[in-house]
Length: 332
Image (cartoon, rainbow, N blue to C red; front, side):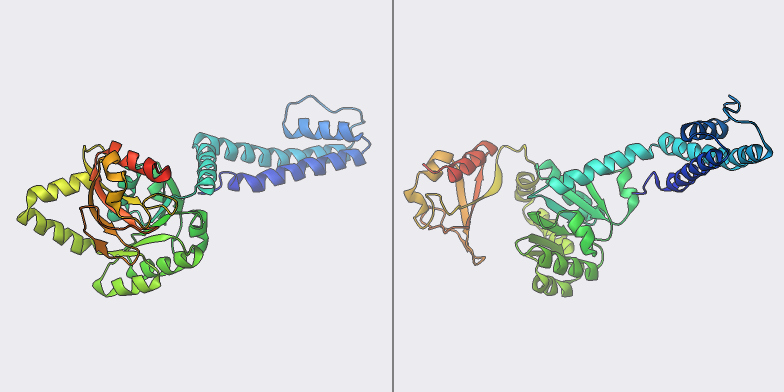
């Protein structure tokens, strides 16, 4: 964001120099310091009050002439630049950007989306609708015109830009740039800045998926493969595909899929799930257990034994999901 005071700073300093020089000159001609400043000010502002406290001499007139020639010009230009900044809304934009930077600096546990193309825009919108705090990073300044959320304008490949987006305090990072090299570089940099960050990276080409994993991505997504898979599912089982799409994307849908993290202090750790009242009291339908090694256990009868940090994949209403979150935090 361009500083609205940038153009006004130099003429402003020049105007202060003129005031100081005029005050010193009038003082050398015999006026007191305050009278010297006052005479300089009325001369530069051309209010026409006349000379004060001294006999008008050629030297006096010369000082006044120079002040009028230089001071009036500089002062008028300075006032014009400030007025232009105010009229164009630059000051308002600057205040808004300052507030946005403060909000980002205070954010914690948020999600950073690098790249605001078609993929990044959709991701940011869906995460925002789901209640996530999202910070978008994009190098195009025109993004400000059509995005009202938290935004950092800059190259995501720059560590300082990632720092400005709060990468050290973020919970997750989505890398959705168009360049496979940039996606790889951002993933590598973000992992170095925040080892605990959950990173989802876009694979522009099939050959980069493995490299992104080695660079530190927790998940690698190829939009082309996902798009092809969805198209095939619509051909084979269109109603099932519609149901899954709605349960995942529509937060207001009556039944939706979700995951519940098994906290270390909860009563679910290292005991068969069916021996606890968790499923009965929450009303959720257990689909699978995601283990720490990445594998899935599909013992839907509740005989699975969750470990700390593992996640239950469940189906239920939003109320049931909220009850489950509360149950895990405050086990019965």
